[in-house]
Image (cartoon, rainbow, N blue to C red; front, side, top):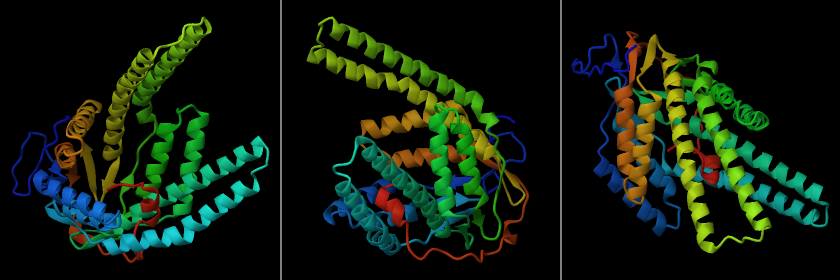
Length: 371
C-alpha cells in the first residue's frame, strides 16, 4: 500500500487517490487556546502548592478529548479532579505510607548488617517500586478508558494489574539478561496484553503484531548502541591511561568531555526515534476493530522528523511551545492513520463492566503514565 493515506473527510471530500481508506480522526486543537489552559494550570498549581494539579490534568484532558474527532464524532472525557485527588490520597495513606515505614524499619534493623544484606534490601525495594509502577500504569489506563466516551459509548479495560506488573518485571529481567535484545519481544507481549483487554462498549480490538517484524529495525538501533558503548569505554580507557602516566585532565578538558558525551547521545536518540516510528507503524497496521482495519503511513523517517521537530520546539521555547507540540502530534496522526472497512458502529452496545470510582492514585504518586 502507498504511504499516502486517503483522507476521506466526513463531507466526502478525498485528498488523495488511494481508494477505500477513510480518515480515522480529525484534529480540531487550537494551539493558542491550549497554551492558555496550560499556562493557567501551571500558575494555579504553583499557587496551590501542587494540589491543583489533579484539576489541571482534568481540564487539559477535557480540552484534548473534546477537540479530537473520531469517524465524525468527538470524544468526551468525563473524569474529574476530585476522583484523581481522592485516588492519590487513598494510595498515599494505604500503600505508600506503610511502605515508607517498612522501608525505614528495615534500614534501621539492618544498619549493622553485611554489605550483601544491604544489597539484597536495596534490590527488594527496587523490585517493589517497579512492581507498583507496573500496576500504576495499568490501572491509570483503565481509568482513562472508562472516562472516555465516543457516541455515548465508554471504554473499559479488563485484565489484572498484578499480572501486568509481573509481566513488566519479567520483561525488565529478560531485557537485562539479553543485553536489550528481548526489547521488541517484550514490547509486543505487553502491548498485546493491553489491547487484548481493551474494550469500546461490548467489543475489543483484534491486535496481531509479530516481534519478528520489528527486529530488522531494532537491530540497527541495537548495533548502534553497541558501537556507542564501545567508543565510550575506549575513551574512558584512554583517559585512565593518561591519568596513569601522570597527565591530569584540566577543568576545561573535563567540560569538553562532558559536552562531547552528551552530543554523542544524539545519533543514538535519533536511531531510537526512527525505530519507534517503525514499531508504531507495525502496531497500527496490526489493529482491527469492528470489521475495520487501521491503515498506517507512519514511517521511521517521518516519525523521526516529528520527534526532532517537537524536541526543538520544546527546547527552543523553554517549554512554552508544548501546546504546539500536541497540535503537531495529533496532526501527524490525522495525516498518517486511516481506516479501511464498512462496519456499522451503531451496532456497538454499552459495556456492563464496572468502572473504578477513584482516579489514577498510583500513577499520580509515582508521576508516571500518559497525559
